[in-house]
Each structure stands twice: as structure tokens, then as C-alpha cells.
Figure 1 (cartoon, rainbow, N blue to C red):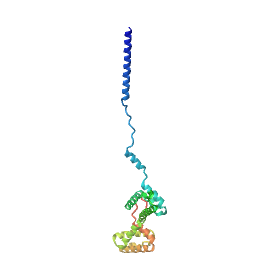
Figure 2 (cartoon, one colour):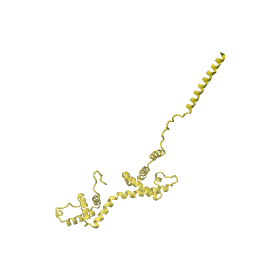
Figure 3 (cartoon, rainbow, N blue to C red):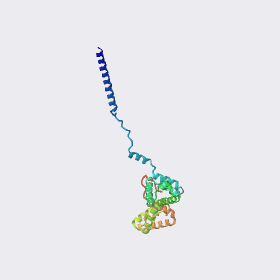
Figure 4 (tube, rainbow, N blue to C red):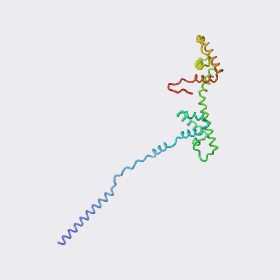
Length: 236
């Protein structure tokens, strides 16, 4: 009987040990098996990071605007012209200026962010170069209407009898009449022949140019200026 009980105890111990070993091996396999990896947070690609960093960079043209507003205070005519310049024309002027400076070995950034080794004397010289370039464009733009008027009037004076110049003379004569720079047209002149009226107009234009030079130039500008488009502000 004792032998039988001893055998049962041994069998029970073996079964318990077997179960424990089986559970232990299963747990180790479960720990060894990889879990489903969570997707790593998506980071911005180098290209996207570079694009955003570029957007955060200050605009060189804006830096140039700031430099001009601070440096050209003593030149109100030039400063006002730059401020009133439309955005597209300002961009074109800035690009032309940058190309001009590049041809001289100058970088525009030296104006508003000078290198430590750039002497003050050289920086002043660079400012003079850039300021002179801007003044040339400014004065050319401000004189544009007068230049066109002078060229048109010079062409008329060379050939006042030319058919095309007669049309211009009539426009100029109408401007002189509207501004009271020549006597009103008489009924006799209206009834006169075309050649007689033309001779009168040529004489009246010459007298107005001699007697009222400043007002004549204003009338000349108006005669040369193209008709204003609907909704467009008249040029000064």
C-alpha cells in the first residue's frame, strides 16, 4: 500500500512539473513574439522643412525698401518716387539694379548687411553708386512726359505742313484754346479755306510758345498724352 501511494505521489509531482514547464515555455514564446509596431510619427521630409525655412527668410527686396526709406530721407523727390512706384515696377527696378551692381562686383546685401571687413568708406561709395542709379531712373521717369512732348513738338516744327503733323497741331491748338493761351476762333476763320486755317494754327502755336512758355509746355503735354482709359487715374 505504501508503495502504491508513493507511486501516485511521484506521478502527481511529475504531472505538476510538466504543466509548469509547459506554461513557462508558452509565456516565453509570447514574450519573444514581436507586437504590432505602432507607426512612427511622420516627420516632414527634408524638402518640406527646407521650403518652410525658405518662407521664413526675410525678403531681400523688403530689406532694400527699408534701407531706401531710411537712407534716402534727405532726397525727398527720389524717396517719394520710390514709395509711389507700383509693386511690379519696383520689382523690375530692383532686379535691374541688382543686375547692374552684379556687373560691378557689388552685392546689394552689402548696403543693409555689410560684411565686417567692409570699410565705411567703401560702404559710402556703394551707397553713392546705388543712389545715383536710382536718381537716374527717377529723373528719367519724371521727365518722361516732357521728353515725349518735346520730341512731338520738334517733329511738328520740322514739317508743320505734313498731314500727320497737322493732326497733332489741331490737338495742340485745341488745348491752347481751352486754356486761353490763344484768341478764340472767329467766324471768319471758320469759313476760311483749309490752307488759311492751317496757317493761322501754325502762327497761333508759335505765338503761344513764345508768350506763355510754361503754360504752353503743360498744353503740349496734354496734347501728347494718350486718352485716359476708363477707370484709369489721370497721370500727373
